[in-house]
Length: 190
Image (tube, rainbow, N blue to C red; front, side, top):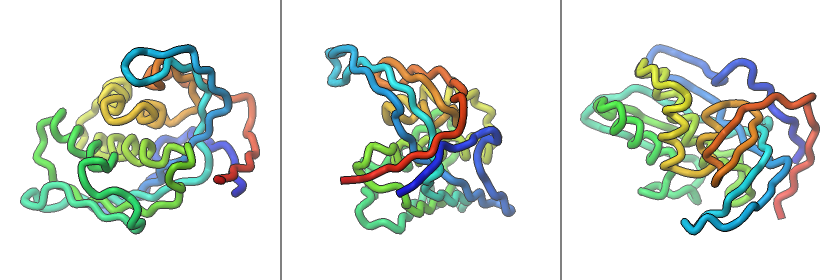
């Protein structure tokens, strides 16, 4: 698979029609990774340079009847549909934090392969947080969304910032950065 690093100068690639948003959730690649030691909490202390790439999943999020709560569908039968699903966890965390009535339908079209280290689930979760924040006009700052995302997964905060970044801690401490130029990448999944 050939990909390029992704220009994210315009946040959230989205299409809005009435009560529906359709967005791309990009994959990521770690350009460097230093494991600095054990944290004692089941994670390693790391320092990593990460960038989004052009491979993306697609999310379609629609406001729905509040009686239905959060509805979720995915075209990939290998994606977990219950409590382990990061999109559902992100939506539930968003609605719990904002105290809004959950009323959305979310469709996920998977293109990022599972288990490839490309952050598909984390990107889908972060994109869900970003879209719901915009859709429901809650105006949560990116730092707040990143903190919320860190309760879902270590890579989620990276995707909230929609930029190449230096990430530390277990990955939740994100410093956005600009790469010197676009890179061409060849990504192989064994």
